[in-house]
Image (cartoon, rainbow, N blue to C red; front, side, top):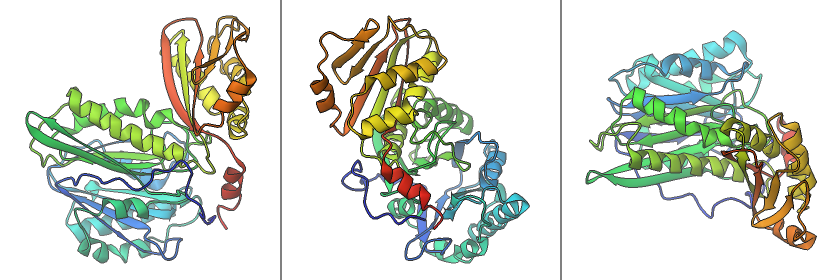
Length: 409
């Protein structure tokens, strides 16, 4: 694994102060899965009555842990729940050995914290194709249980990192019917990030009271405009997992259509998604791709996806080159409807191209100056209809190659 020597220049100044979520505790330990001198396993334990929803990678080579979570996520159960996560080894493409490792871990956790095994959800992240040394995890379960704490979310966020240069957290507290409701979450992700459900690992918790079915509906809906709208390198992980758990400890009942709760959950999810992009391997620019005027919303997403994943667009941004021709190229190759003479392109507020040609008002030096900014907005209007969509990505630098060329060393 390449050593992370520098924190991303797009990182927040510090880990945020997250609201404590009643009904859940966290712990983290060093198990030596791959790394030395740092925690690499985290445990979250939820009180009885908690509901859990999730979305997972659509990869045909998804990991044993993902398959296990998918088999468990659709059940209502009054028991508590546990989430166990390790970094350093993805336990993917490990065949029956991988399945046996998941069973060994989830059964041991269930026994340790007195839960049914079907209420233990596991995730693994790291190198693909190497057997998971699950005994190193199960051997630390008593230590994990003994150190559970309501204020341990930041330590949990640190423990699940791989090539991440900073731990990721986001939270929000709102008032519904005179009662306080809190949401807080953590995420890991830096490379192998491309939308195909939820990308990377994400764990979000709330003390709201909501049924599993309602929570699942809400999470699936919000996922499309948050974690499914980001990309770092166009590669979808074998281990992508998003779990959202509600303890109900606030006593405040919500549904998928409660406006304040839906808005707050969306805000937390989008914050975490943006942090993953800001920690993109080797990233120096945070880029918003805004597409309007498409024939349909689906077409707008197709165009945004083509631009956001284009190595030529991303390297131009890395070089601070206002090469709008590469945006034109990406639109043309996407497969969605476009008309050369109707589309327009803006860099921020600067109109760059329109009417099938460079804009008469465009000055190259203005575009070059804008590209020196750390946060970039590329806005394409197709001029065809009312479809719109937004995606977020980062630039592509030599740092990405350095990190991934040395990933297993």
